[in-house]
Image 1 (tube, rainbow, N blue to C red):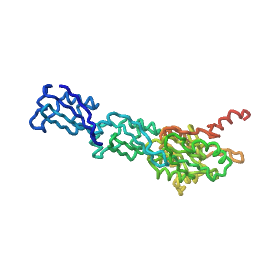
Image 2 (spheres, rainbow, N blue to C red):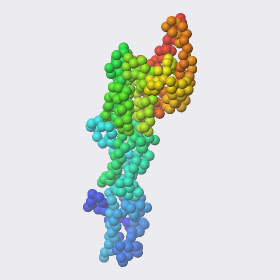
Image 3 (cartoon, rainbow, N blue to C red):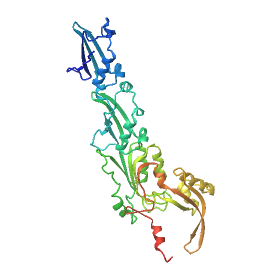
Length: 404
């Protein structure tokens, strides 16, 4: 039997018609001559021929052949099959994500793609509006993650506001992605000598995100540590990356300027905010000194009031040696499991030249290891940020001071 299918020239926006005529005497089978028209059916070889022409799976014939009409006439049998166009336009996976718009800087940037292969299960879910992020194929996730420089394995946390619509030329998949860049310049209003020079050099690096994509990123500026924490909370899930300019110390404290002897601003505070995101930012540039310090330092406890200021506890009588140790152990181990904290005796030389022994907290920390839990690409300074160079001035002084 000759199954010579032809595509009809008159088709609708939703369906395409295929026709075939079988002449009497060509071995017509009983299924085509059934007396009751609604029981007539196309034999398997006819389905195979049509599936081959339309490049569809013959085993899904009952799904993509939406209407079948078989008419017995005087000179033969006319067969017509209507196929919904979505089956013809969405025949293979091809995830070429493009930004929906390159105009305007928005908190979420939406990327769209029409590369989802049509299957019976997918078509049913789309029409019932039951598609979720869990349905997005791994290949689509991988390509999108690479395009926006986020982690593929964290797709379910940074991908947002998914919509899938059925259109004439395929399924339109639309996904929102974090698009905020936070620039926290805590040197604003600083008065120390180095505030302006550091800003003048280091500030040229990382202040604005480079032109990475075909769209613009929304930049939010913060001039205080409080503003930074509030922004991280308010814009949770919409932040793509951030940069921080400030003064820093080995113990993880951050200064807005050097007029303040002690600070309650810690790297911990930023990390805690990012913990709630459940995805790594694409880029984090921590431009303050010692942001990536790895080693041991001692925090001298000159008096208990110092610890009270850090903790906010006004009752100095409540502080004992064990509590001090536990306070700092909890603070550091929360972000670095390898951190070691212990109370030790620190020797100091008074202004009169006398040796003075005080309690101190010895801490071994790996800030770099902690930060890489929060970003895909990180800029850190293990020592002092000097015009973008990471320099260990104390180490250099030890090498050069040969007369000591």
